[in-house]
Length: 216
Ligand code: AP5
Image 1 (cartoon, rainbow, N blue to C red):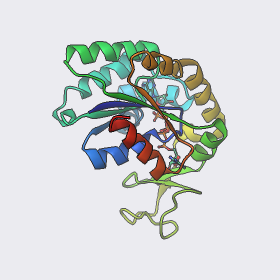
Image 2: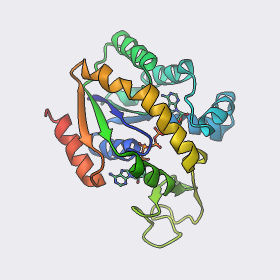
Image 3: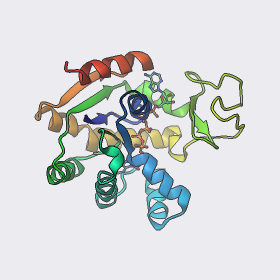
């Protein structure tokens, strides 16, 4: 099954994509993670993307469309994929349609995760991850079992994303509302769109998504 998780920053796209990947064997394709990996490698692409991402703006369509086109050619997407953070505007959605037609692939569902703006700011401002293995935590909602020690790898260093400060998050929300939210209408017209209540707890959001993937 091939799906898109659509929603504003902090809606829970990454959280739900990882759960679905574990449960269903579909591959999470997060353009944000791929761009952050390019930044960590210090590649030219990463250097160009960093300044744009730190301001909360969108990296150019050519770059992200190219990344996804290459990724869809890899064998590990054969059991399906979960697009997380792509497409982010109409031009990217049209490029994706073209790409899928060329590769003879179909899009089965677009899941919109709906969350109120104030909750998004709280979620993002509290988010951090293990500097060593990348395990995700949150100040209020998901602390490590032993304070200051990663549950997964026992490391003691943690990091926060540079674009996760409240001022940049507000700019990211503006970009979402002006450029990405129109995709709700775009996919509504295709019949693939389903909406879930992202204000519910993580397990309940997963349950709603599973219901939508199973046919509702
Ligand atoms: P990207 O990395 O895609 O970030 P984003 O879309 O802003 O989304 P986030 O990763 O912040 O949030 P999420 O929805 O995944 O939420 P999460 O699960 O982490 O993009 C970053 C930047 O890269 C962009 O600004 C842009 O510059 C560039 N970029 C990326 N893709 C691009 C593209 N296609 N085109 C151009 N530029 C692109 O959850 C957030 C927190 O909330 C976590 O702490 C989690 O534990 C918690 N949480 C999750 N669900 C719940 C729940 N139900 N209840 C309570 N807490 C919850």
